[in-house]
Length: 299
Image (tube, rainbow, N blue to C red; front, side, top):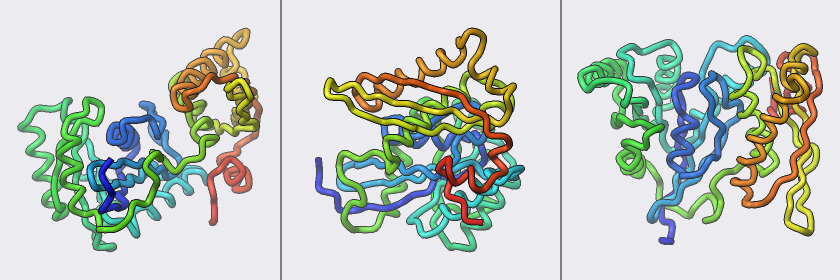
């Protein structure tokens, strides 16, 4: 690997479900952020680290900017606001729609106020025709003078090399921020909890998965190399607990099996996973519980 001569932090921001986590994973080449089709999948700021040639990119994947309805929502919006500051550049991810919505305008206003170099990244270009894409570019050019506009498809891997070449210009000279073998700043326990939460989002409908949190109560590597993990899934209502467990435990078994497979891939080890489901009424509006579940809440 080449010696790192440039290293910097780049925030990926945008409205919910625009593809920020999919892009972070695609850039790094590994799954460091969970992905689902449901808005507000990402709750915390997550660093995804990529070494490319003589440069180290540290991408900050953030929750989607939305109108909060709970204290957890307030926390997520605060994470976005704090992440769009003290960085070397910002990528504003948008969908290929020729309209600047309220979340995009709010982020553009913050970028302007902080005088940050910003690149407009138009994602999901595989879903529109070229003429429509030109309209989107023109609409955003009128809203802000971006350093560059890069059309991509994070899902298909299109335009990622071009995006990295553009972003490399904003990396300051200096030593790398993370060691060579690190691809995320998340502790392994947190990654395991997030993998379980992703499977909840993929398998459950409506509000139920948004009202879940996961804690890892035990994380132990045995002498035979097997990693024992005990996890507790918290939900907000007793009726939700029954749905998560499912008839004869079928749903919980399905979620746990899918999670275990991803865990084994991430840790390169055999996993013994045991999961429980508990109820914490309306935890998303309880500041103490929000903090206990790993979302540091200061206001």
